[in-house]
Length: 247
Image (tube, rainbow, N blue to C red):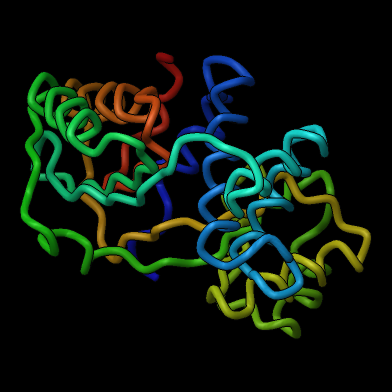
């Protein structure tokens, strides 16, 4: 896989987290709500809901919050109805951007995304303009102090993993969506502690940036991810380690 998930790596290496824990919980609650609305409130028959609930548990969300989000999604309680909208566009130097949102007001979200892009030397594009660059994959990250590469390879390759990449501080296990649950569970069953397990959009190619160009795209990514309705931003860029050390 040529491109790989550079923004996910960058956030990890910078130690970046949501500005507040409530911001992370807000994203997770929206995902659980939409998953329950689309596929029902029983996680046994709803793979998207199972993943959303597991991600919430991995991030220590209280069970009461999870159940309230499910009930909201199934209509047992009132609340806003969220719509999935994905925006495609470009950042500085032609970097491809895929911006996944869950919104209760598409006009507001569109305006906010457009404003952020315009202010930071980017622009919205037509539907389909960059989506072809990205593949949706399951990604599990295991820190290198939790498991050695040989053991991890033996566990995940048998369960359907496509690739294991050494990222210096740990290993990223990549797999198809259909194998994601099996790969994550195999890691758990082997008593290997993972740092994160999530769905990511992996680019097939990268734009290499340095200096001020690198700083500009990092700033744009942070601004986009701070928008309330944005769930995930994917991009096809790479920057040198020294730029990250400035943060």
